[in-house]
Length: 195
Image (tube, rainbow, N blue to C red; front, side):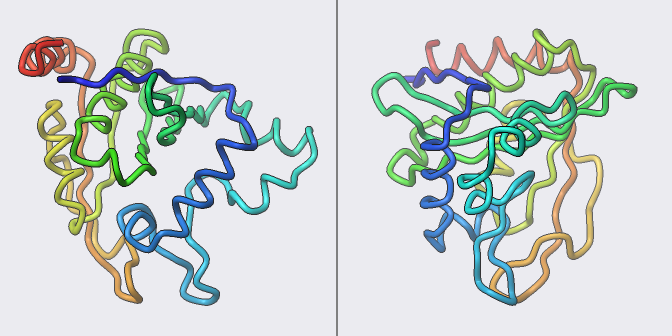
């Protein structure tokens, strides 16, 4: 069965608190961006959860109401808040880099990541009318690589030493998907899950 998820840009401080707590788990943070070598704090893309929780309304709006960086909380009907996704958009190029994190480890390998990815691609291609979406996936995150390939992402480049984990640098893969490729692939993928 294919789980249903929804996206919201109305990110709450409680959502950010859960992101902070999920990233404190070494297994979660190691598959995301690891930890800072100097102080061991989990790294996060786009903002620092610890700092933004205590921010003023203006500071909060500067992070969560950007036209170039769209931040979404991922919700599942029976599971509440389960993760976060972001689109870092280059409007002149009609493309975006996508980031996605399912923080609830008990939901890993139950297709919530795939469902959230489909929702984000629908957002990027249908709602925002982008031409291309790409991801930067570390070589050690085999499950993410498999998920992106399954949705039709194509290897576009090999990036050297871009992700740090346990004090070591690892390579990553740039993978991209075009809007016309996605529309064909989406139907096939959802049919596999009976969705």
